[in-house]
Image 1 (cartoon, rainbow, N blue to C red):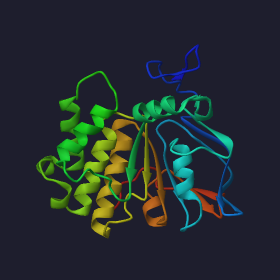
Image 2: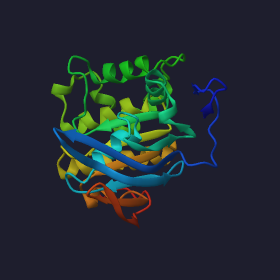
Image 3: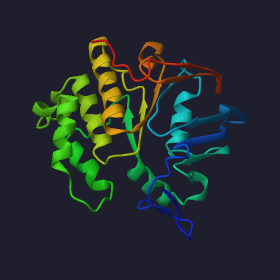
Image 4: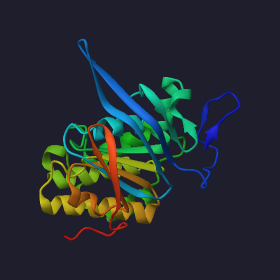
Length: 253
């Protein structure tokens, strides 16, 4: 993917595998609280290659969720830059940033964010519809997702009729239905018990392996982060260390 001659995001251009899919350089985000300036993220730089599974770990207040929003283009940096597959977020208009997110990034959130009046299938279908893609929903691919995520028998139920683990698996299907190059997951096991947490981690690892997405997971839980190939630790808005994870090993159920 690259900028067109007019400087606009063009989703039709092939990816360049030789470059990082996510690049952050000297990212800083400062919030104003009255007369006080609070730096939630301070000078963070990182590089993520296509197909990696990376976890960012830190306690509450470490800046990891703010970093998630910066890397996903959901908020603008005070300083520094974010480059997604060769495109600098800062060089795009708001509408271009939205279009890039719709086509290139799938989001998974702690609170699931499913629409309560729609069934599981409806939540997946609406994600495909609002992505703006011209091609129709690929039902063969959807069948594969349903089998991979073990949700085939739950698609006609509304969120209130589903367990937390089932809701999160449908939320993952919703994130994957547009075949994004990047999956950003913010505390995807935060509201789940151990059994469902392990199942969701398995699904994220499996989608990373089988579908080839680059996966970046934010978590406060080092045990959840251990399934990733690389683990980055944050504290006080900064990266403090990095270590290897299990390299995409499935969680023990």
